[in-house]
Image 1 (spheres, rainbow, N blue to C red):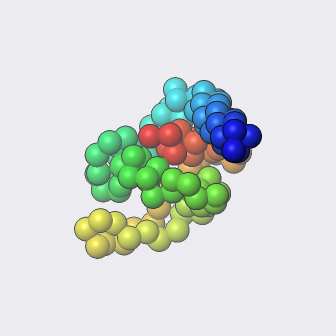
Image 2 (cartoon, rainbow, N blue to C red):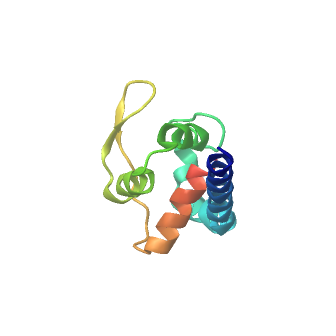
Image 3 (cartoon, rainbow, N blue to C red):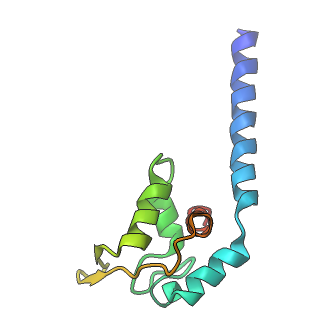
Amino acid sequence: MKHASFVGALLTASLVLSMSAASAAVDAHAATGLAKSNGCMKCHAVDKAKKGPSYKKIAEKYKGKADAESAIIKSITTGPKIKLDDGSEDQHKVIDTKDQGKLKNLVNWILTQ
């Protein structure tokens, strides 16, 4: 039984460290700069709904989902039609970069909100 408790504690510690490393790897300044320069902040805010959902709400929606990063990258690079909170539809803006590092940084910043 002691072995199972130790293994559980070790797995928990490993998960916490890997989550901290992922958070530490996010360059918030670069992410917010990319979001601002692409007009994302016109429709989104970190903690309140605007025309689009807050980044906190987006992070909650994708929490624990293995495909979170790829799903958001697809949304911000392909410009799909999206349904807004008021029931209207709009074309999502496409981020003006093909740099996967910048895109992943932005998405991971969103997911850490």
